[in-house]
Amino acid sequence: MIDIHCHILPGLDDGPETLGEAMEMCRRAAADGVRTIVATPHFKPGTYEYAGADILAAAAALGEAIEKEGLDVRIIPGAEIAVSPEMKDYVKRGGCLTLNRSRYFLAEFHPLSVPSRWDAFLESFLDAGLRPIIAHPERNYWFIKHREALSAAVQRGIMVQITAMSITGGFGPETRDFSAYLLKNNLVHAIGSDGHSADLRPPMLSAAAAIAANLIGAERAAALTTTIPQSIIEDRPLPDWEPEIDFDPMEYKERNWFRRLIRSI
Ligand SMILES: [Fe+2]
Image (cartoon, rainbow, N blue to C red; front, side, top):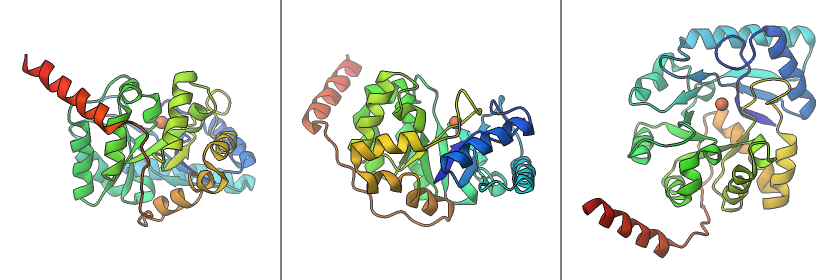
């Protein structure tokens, strides 16, 4: 399996603090069947800020320790970029903040809300040849309440990564149920661990992949941790994506009409 979202580089964000802790995470991932980990430290102006070279250096140092120990797992560079007006500059900075320097990058929203016109903003990256992947929308309160807006964005080319612990119920029933909804409606492109530590938020995928297989079938579930992430890290286009939506478009239209009415009063 390939994990496209993991905070495994020591000292860059709220992931492991030491190389020893990072190595413990690598051992757990390897034992779980993960063979490639994209290291995706938070990149958030004013909170977690570093140069692309810092990611490459930290990934190389961890790679050396892995090789020394003989673990069957590799680390490649990436980041999880907080959505902000300056995001366009950051995404291209040093070419190191996208996933393995590909066209794909992880975009993280605030857990409670999204900025207005968030969808048009993300879609503007598509015009520039880049593909945003929304990191764990199932953990965002606004997306839970506006699932039709997320569906519409996916239909226009925005991608979605959901988190293994959301599927297994570690973030509560509402997040678990929304994860199942997204999986069943073909609105998920990848399952990532969003690992932060060896124990509390471990870098593991297999338990979530097994639940996903029950929900959507073994082949489709396997693609979310293998072939689609492989295309992402090799910077290849994805197969055509056809979301199947079970919300009622008329209901959505009416709700929008109601919103416009409220705004006009
Ligand atoms: Fe994350």
